[in-house]
Image 1 (spheres, rainbow, N blue to C red):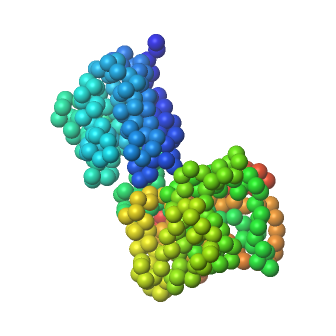
Image 2 (image 1 turned 90 degrees about the horizontal axis):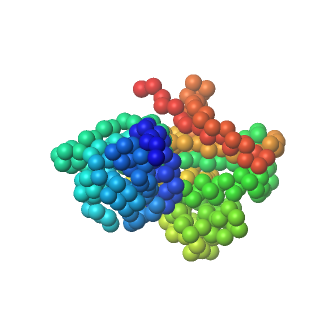
Image 3 (image 1 turned 180 degrees about the vertical axis):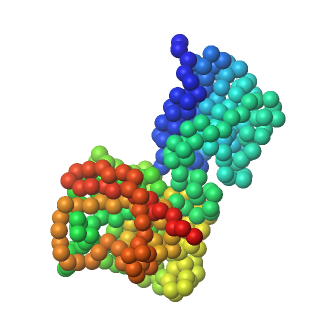
Amino acid sequence: MVGVSVDEAMRRAIELGARGLGTTSPNPVVGCVLLDADGVVVGEGFHAYTGGPHAEIVALAQAGERARGGTAVVTLEPCDHTGRTGPCSHALIRAGIARVVIAVPDPNPVASGGAATLRAAGVRVEFGVRADEAEAGNVAWLTSMRRGWPYLIWKYAATLDGRSAAADGSSMWITSEAARMDVHALRGTVDAVIAGVGTVLADDPRLTARNLRDGTLAIRQPLRVVVDSAGRTPADARVRDGAARTWIATVAEVGAGPDGRVDLPALLAELHHRGVRAALLEGGPRLAGAFLAAGLVDRVVGYVAPKLLGAGPTALVDAGVTTIADAIDLEITDVTRVGSDLRITALPRKREA
């Protein structure tokens, strides 16, 4: 068998790790490839679900004795603590691994330290191979762990002239069925879906994730969060239907911000405490504006339909911008056609201090 380079192995490990996206939280996505002493792949693994075996353990079980004297290529620093599973650093040492190549260090103080443990046992440890790619594949978890609140994606749907509904308030089917199914796939990758009480009162959404093939509820459902300062969510609202967990976040529970409404940083901190590492903000335009004005949005995903309305509510209201110089600049990272619509993904640019 032909050996592969460490760089090729890390690329494969990143691909493997992506398979766990949406099912591992509050744990990270991790991929691992094991090479024997000749550089031949003898084991592969990824972390598939919370509480399940970590990527390194899966790969070691596949490799068996062939791992001895070999190299472990892993997207995240092996854990060094005992939680639902044992420390991966110790498992690698017991298996006789001679070298561990890591893309990104673990920022979680509870689990980090694997590299130091490996080195103390005489294992060669290297960092930084394909670090940017590994970081991008695990961006929500890494960002959340480093700062203490979830990675927040604002998703909106609008016509080409920026309208989220017609003048009479009707908003059903602005985008194509393909785009709506794409949103369900996006919901399946996050831990929470956030909407304002205004959206609940106007549209009565379920905010669930559904399977793309048959429309049934997905097995894993994100937490539904309604930002409802005064507790106006009706008892019979569909977000209370039992299809998924729901949190009605009120001022009484979370605290008030400067505007008297729910304190948004406190809301995100509480979500992090509840194990939410990635959240999807879906509505409405005033709540989105408040999150953007506070600098709390990490990614924007816009579904733009080839329609013109000329009147009606806009997708965004009052984001703290009063002049063009204060506009929130975005870096477009992807434009993809989804059905008849465009899905535009962009990242807010950091403003100069």
